[in-house]
Image 1 (cartoon, rainbow, N blue to C red):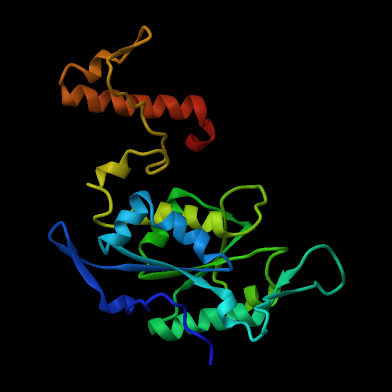
Image 2: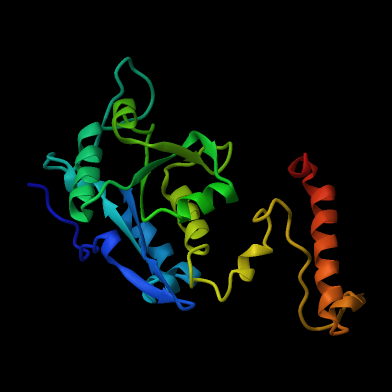
Length: 252
């Protein structure tokens, strides 16, 4: 019998509903499977994600894989077969951790492994994942995880770029932030993210705030004249021009 994490168990995804903008939504649940839950919680409690959690707009928690190892020293790794550097996370603690989550939730969430070998995270992928009722994120560490647990349990692998990090926690936190801000009610309005970079295949337009003149540099006059139609036209033109100049491959 494996010990339950100290945090209070989450409710089942399909039974949780809330109202936002006059409509009823299911509350999305995200669980991070990690060796460093405190590291994750330190970030998840701040800024937009932290406010969304407090307001009940998303249920997001980190679960310690070490709670599911039978080893009295709480080890979850061992040396790789065939030799090599580093240590590899073992199958059983990961599998038991995920299966306990499935039992607790009464459903099997999609399991994503954060890996430099995965497909690169995009805004389109974030929107796809934000439409799920529940999601589990597996964070590797050391030299990664035993390939057999990937074959048996993982639904997809996602990378946040072509570089290597110490573990999957930072990519998991990036993904949580990216998804949470797309959920209903988290931002003030859909327009808050609809014009952001990458949302519709273009980069975001330039932003300005007070003062109107700073060290001789002026805010574009169109943003000061109160003509909203012209401002929207200017913003769209800037989005297209910026994308052509900075990221032309996005237009191909």
